[in-house]
Image 1: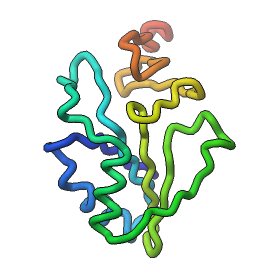
Image 2: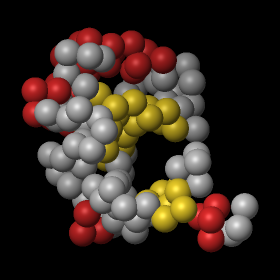
Image 3: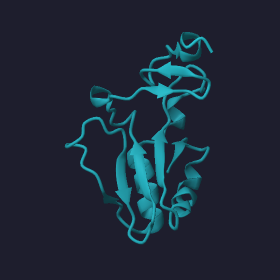
Amino acid sequence: MKLNIVAIKNFNDDELLDFVEFIRHRPIELRLIEFMPFDKNQWNNSKFISFYEQRKIIEDGLGIKLQKTDDLEKDKSQTSKTYSIEGYQGKIGFITSMSQNFCGGCNRLRVSADGNLFICLFDNREINLKEMLDL
């Protein structure tokens, strides 16, 4: 199971350690996603908190170094940099779409809950699959 959290400065960045604590006894991957600019999310740079800042908050708060568990060099299509914490059942995945984008290796398609297909998170175009399927 994966739990996605968009990290936003001065909104929920003070809860990062609480989110990490949530995975201590749960085999869940906490995925911390960098806040990205979209038309309707009122994005501005002052709300952006990078992967580096998020990792530092967690490491400083826990007094440990996160342990890398994946090798992005082997799989260029990965969208998450995954880390573990000794004694924790869960893992932390950082999705670094702004600070270290992965567009060149992305092979993902996304379908929204209302049936729209997105070929890129940075592209506002969408394809209504329900219309195509005549639903």
